[in-house]
Image (cartoon, rainbow, N blue to C red):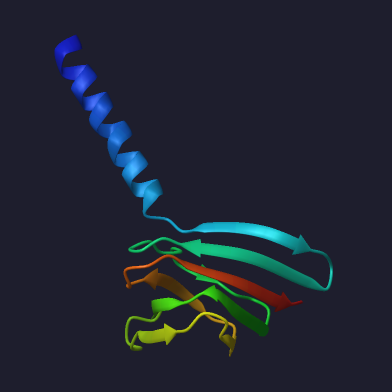
Length: 115
């Protein structure tokens, strides 16, 4: 039994670490009753996971740009591909989506949502 348990445990731990490595990093740098500012880091191939923006006024600043795919929750709607240069700023509406880095470089975003 021990011979089977140990390899299974190691495989499970390896898969959970692999899954975490595929997730982008989200760091809240400021939050109060009026605004939320987060720093998002997406290594190549990583993604945010499906999430919802509830505040309608959202601005994103690309510290390090790259190629992103915005995947809407509604599977009937098409994904949107963004090729963004360093220093670019965009206004994006509130939505439910997954953000995936489909490029070959790390992407760093500062996102500001007005509450």
